[in-house]
Length: 152
Image 1 (tube, rainbow, N blue to C red):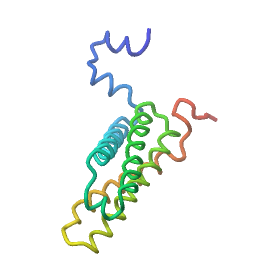
Image 2: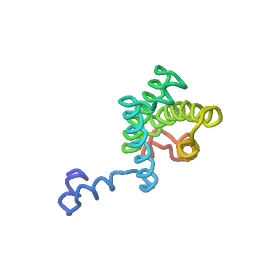
Image 3: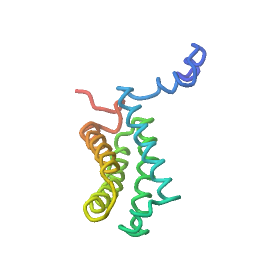
Image 4: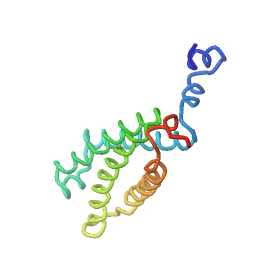
């Protein structure tokens, strides 16, 4: 009998079963899973309806490239957080860093060169960058997954 069936028979609801499948520490996995979902949504919305000021400043091809980087980061990140595959999450961190760097650099440039108040989006980008900067320190030295770590 699998853990899924045992948990279902024990009365675990779908939310509690999903929480139980996250890797330890669960709250960290939940936070970063939500962050990657945000990157996915941000990238998808930026492809569908890109910001006019960002598109005019960086150009449409670069804007779409940054959006695709965020979509890739979201897809790989959510999948790897759920499975605990830290080797795959490294690619998600790199992809998100590329997308955030592009949007951040364009926003900084617009904050100093154009009219308008751009500090609020800039602070959101900086906050996301800080949250993303912590993740490599957590996953970079880890093995493929906790189950495969070598024991001495």
